[in-house]
Length: 326
Image 1 (cartoon, helix red, strand yellow):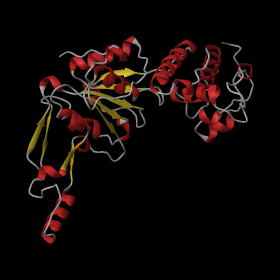
Image 2 (image 1 turned 60 degrees about the vertical axis):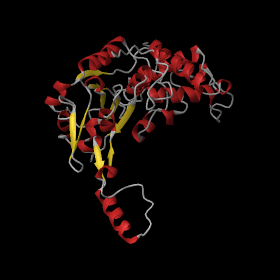
Image 3 (image 1 turned 90 degrees about the vertical axis):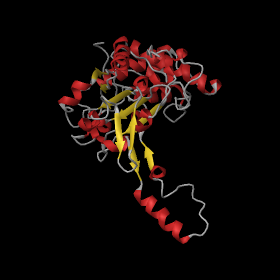
Image 4 (image 1 turned 135 degrees about the horizontal axis):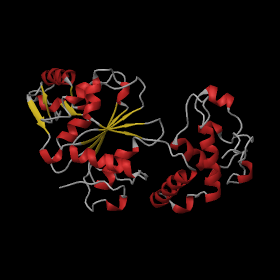
């Protein structure tokens, strides 16, 4: 079966895989990004996504898995992560414990059998994806740049022909079937510089930009609230009117243009901020929504704790920048 991503959740099959995401992921992908996903599926190569934090890199694989009805497995990378953890882990200590317990107890209700090493191995995200027999799985490898420099190249030995790995402790060889090789999407914030050249040559690359126009943010807001109303209690969802969204978007883009920011706010910060402007009842905003005429240049920024996440940014940015040149 050929899989093709269109960024249309309504295309979801009637009988998705049990491990497929159950909640729709509202996502707006530009045509170039949709093409990049389909190239990765067609060529069976990892798709490497780069871009600043908060631009939706981790949400794309969920949207792909949901629309295609495919199983989804996520692997969050840490500084100590090793490539084998994504394949499998073997608990030799638990096996030894079970051996000792079996000797001491006359009645053993343990479902694990110490004589069977397969009872003590568990599969990681890639391992589970390789075991998929009916369809490919979507694997998210999140923030690969957090690992040490050898980690990306170690992955190449697995994410390439013959698409298999061995479990030394059990003697098993796990091989992905030809038509079920996983769709791998990798994210990077480039925290430690460039990734190794051999790894980059193997990947399809796409740089995810933050929406630069208020109209683009408006589209994200529209789809966000539309699916929010479908998945939650509609009467409890206050949808911001377009005039508030447009003014908030213009000011947010202006804030992002400040070259002195240590951490630039992203899409997730904008949506949280807009939620507060629209619905949050506080001393700043006793009768929501927040008055649009108060969202003006040189006015105090309401709820700036949702936008600025570093002390220096918080202290320096108390008022909106001027909009006269927009």
